[in-house]
Length: 97
Image (cartoon, rainbow, N blue to C red):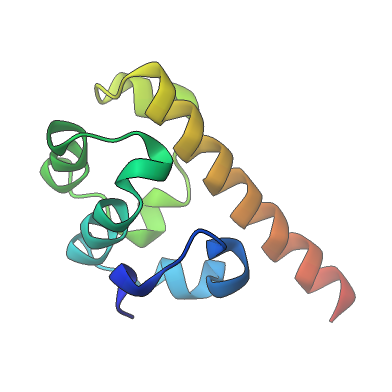
């Protein structure tokens, strides 16, 4: 999966199953592609790589965990909301299929 091709309507383009298969590099590439949407800087993106956060771990990150690894409030809220929406979308999908 080339995370850099993701658009702002990522919810429609990504699935939990896809993200779970991401490597640490895929997560980093995705965050780089969404740096403006999530208000991230290079240091914050580097924290994901430095902590070895792959797709499976990324999907389990909450706002509190993101703050704990050193993200600023804005990016932590933005990413936590994205992760929650992606996870909820997956639960909804599984209910209707």
